[in-house]
Image (tube, rainbow, N blue to C red):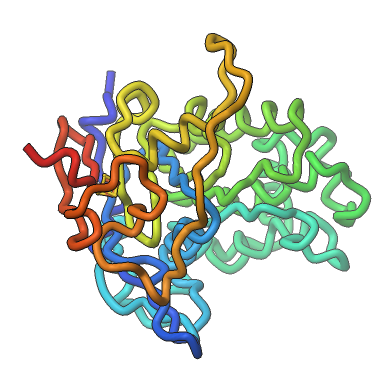
Length: 328
Ligand code: SF4
């Protein structure tokens, strides 16, 4: 049986830097982010709003608005090719076919005036050049893959004729229609209620097994991370401050920010009257303090933390964190 270790790396992000030039100064939204993903692997990226999660994945799709944004450094090796070297025309061929994204809100990502069949078929027509009956067969198959009942008749529906869960399935169908190697799921269950959310997550798992797709999961919900992900990257102020196997992160967090995020989760096995919260606000990215940006909110902060940004410490294979407390 093939284990994750034997599988090929499909995505290798090296020292990615995405900046925005604003009237307040340069916002370093993503500042030296590195990670890799193998076929069939799922990585969760977690962190508060403004930590750089969404800009990281927009950079992977090369959809950062220019200006004010710009990818100013690093490499994104997708299936052996640095996509930052590609022209916009070549990137159009990569988006949808090799890397695709499921957006948060199906009501804004689906076009209300087109039937769902034509929206699912668009990428298939462009990338796989199918048309006529073969295109129609493929659309129906993709809709069946995301468990849309009576797919043959549903292709003529408009988005408003579908329930919220069905619409999100259609968004999923569009993103997997060309069987991409990497799928980015940006808070894909935010607009769904708990039961539909569980069904949708199971569906994503099933699709991943069928297509052997690598998934990058962006979420605020650590419960979803625990259920879905093989590994986790915790982001703070545009950088990954801790990364590791999902068990390392949940059972042995080593960065105070990860510890604080987990401390704010309700638990069934511990009787608490009040959940922890993280004091203060994330820093403004255009004027980061010297030293560790988490220092003003960190209960362990020392003098050194106010002077220099901590280096990356390797704790065990695949588990790293950036905190001066890990210095020996
Ligand atoms: Fe806290 Fe210092 Fe570690 Fe930053 S480096 S997380 S301030 S202990």
